[in-house]
Length: 543
Image (tube, rainbow, N blue to C red; front, side, top):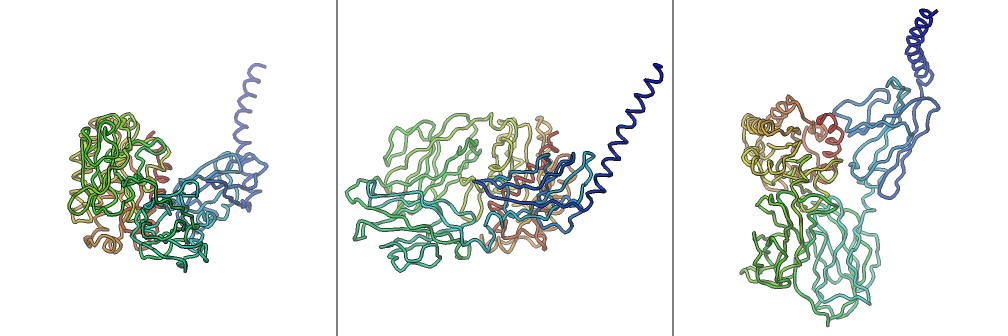
């Protein structure tokens, strides 16, 4: 009897998997023609995918693709699928970290992870989000500075607005009356002043010659070729009080620790320019300046630099922990002060922020894009969209050789567990042979291993020589593609790597304009795509 019970138990245990397999086979056969109907709605800053739930024990697999799929029966290939997610609920929430130029579809999977039916039709997030090229007329800036009757403006007010993704510059117009053509791309007949010399989301207007005390303003975004990116903003009123005192100083618009992000190793400072200044001087102090609203440098100054633009790249790595302060003042052509120093803005250097992971590379890692945006604009940094903590050790202009040379100084103080490495683009496009870049990357890898850091290489995204020449008037070596391929073959031989290159190539294996208008630095869509590819592969390269 005891022997029979034992045998019975064994038979039952043998039958369970057979039963599961049989049930699984029946389910897949019965639902062979099942195809989910995918719905997507926008709610606040998220997009919600939903579909009908099957009354069977299945789970659902969501694919994120960079091209429309060719087949609704087979999974996408590894160079087409950006990411894949699994859920048991008939719902998935997409946040703003995903690029708009993506295609989403869902399929059911059995308990044995086999397909149940077909994939749904793919939905294009860009069309749902109303940001496809044909719908760009609906995009417009929103005024963030307001001067109502009870809180009027001085005669030289700063006018500020929200940035428009992809805008290279802006056109602002001052109006004597409300525009007769709201939500339009054409100038108003009430315009009495306009300027397209606006390369950030702010402008200091000079109203000293305006005869009235009440006017309107609006602004629109323009692309590289001067074509409108959407329509003019809603007109905003300005009431003027000419008796108001005003200190003439730049308005800082860079937040180096926005949303708790760690300060980049090489900070970039940016501001809204002031009337009369042809150059600017930035100073960094290790204590709050003792002389606010003054023209004299602080006695706590530890670094300074003069520039002609509206941003300043710090050439000193900020490695010493603590709180720093920075401010900027305008200068005329002779170097004389134009107004006073701006208010000082603090930022914190905390080396522990890089203990988990760090990114190491050139300007693609450092940040910036769309020609006019620097690493001070967080939207143009792929680190903004990563799902794990990371510190930015990128430095604009780096070659693979300079990366290898600064490794000990710039990486080791943070003691990262993982180092994401993207380097060699500047070297290769300038004519350095792939063999030399590979030597530099090998040296970086070996240094990582020596100090107990896991090196995680990213393959080099392509470039677009014609766009680079147009944007920067720089030539690219003719054999750049072959050299990039050689370096990427080396990277794919490493133990830990993430492949970016295939996702950024157009039919000619170049970087398309919709990812990088300057042919080199990915814009917001490109940075989001980089981050999501890294996110999707992070568990694999860190296990």
